[in-house]
Length: 81
Ligand SMILES: [Zn+2]
Image (tube, rainbow, N blue to C red; front, side, top):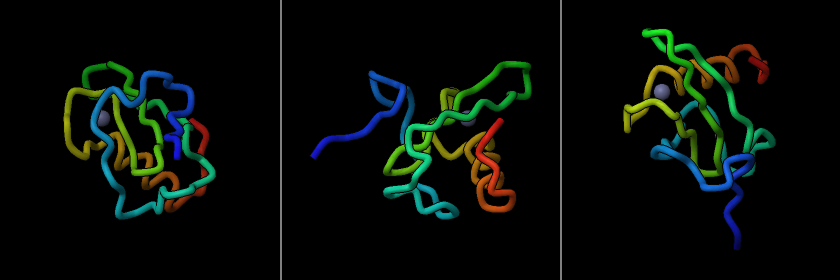
């Protein structure tokens, strides 16, 4: 049993947050990284893992960047940035 980390060889930088919106387990977009703009002009990377989403921002909880990706997937079906 191996864990698939996608493009991030060292694994998620932050905590992987389980999603109640997207069923990430065995999802075809696992390993995909989205980029969202932060409120201070920073860019944050949100990556889907088997267990949920991880974001590169300092918040070790479900942040608005993860929420934005969830909404993008849930309502638009669009996985590009
Ligand atoms: Zn974030």
